[in-house]
Length: 394
Image (cartoon, rainbow, N blue to C red):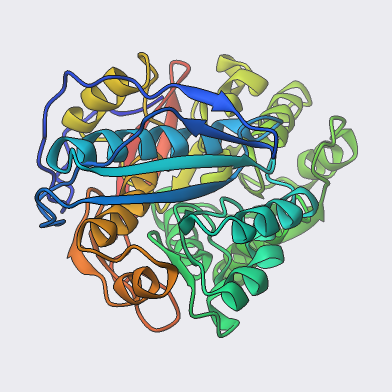
């Protein structure tokens, strides 16, 4: 759960369209996807679709099971809220969402992307979720002319491939890394920083950016692996380094275990990680005591009270988490275009390329590489076993 311990003003526009919403159930498909039953759209004020008549389908590509499932489920739950909102204003416009579970694995994502492309009814995709799977599937989506809007893939190189179909609604690691470095140097007052990455496209990319921005403050570095469970060699190096801050580039499953072993090994410094670790699974894996005081940064906005209430109503009491609000915004970019009559792949792609409207998390407008124009990086901290907002990093 991500909830602010203070009151912060976030520059977003959000119209609450009602809180008594019916939850979207899911049913399994033979092709590996799950599809909410009878999930028609309705719109926020930005759609202007009124009583549009349509019959369309969007897809989600990312984890729903496996070690990193929480981050993908946060997004699909956000999509569920968008679909529920959209349906209220467009009762005649039937839109369904089919989720394809990649487990965040590029090798699993590649054939799933082809299944999505081969389904002519699918005209837009929320995702892919992680940078590695986005890189692996981007060429195929681009060749098919199928628009993608990611709520979470942050590797900067993804927008340099010349893909006209790629978009993301949050800042990339080239914006997060300087903010993390500024927080470590200015707010934490670090004197020596140890940098570790998990060798993934996302984790290494973010860690390298933080390392470059910190410059001479970085003492030692090391690399671990995804699915690793024994971090004792790296723990030994960290303890011997006398670093007072450690930055970890990777995901919550390994970050939590690493944090636990660092504390068991006697390291007392401040643990800092990025959005891949910004999940209650980090606290669960580390244990509340070991996780206390850890700093988790993210280009993702904290959920407003209104969104939280609606999210819980639609998703059977589940709390919003990392990327939930971005999942909502990603879906609304597509759904608003459908309501305006863009009900084929080509016209919906044009709609997204020219999108310019207020979202839940920020004003959303894409440049010609698919990057969003407005970026805010937030620092969260673990306090009493819960991840709470610390501060936005200007």
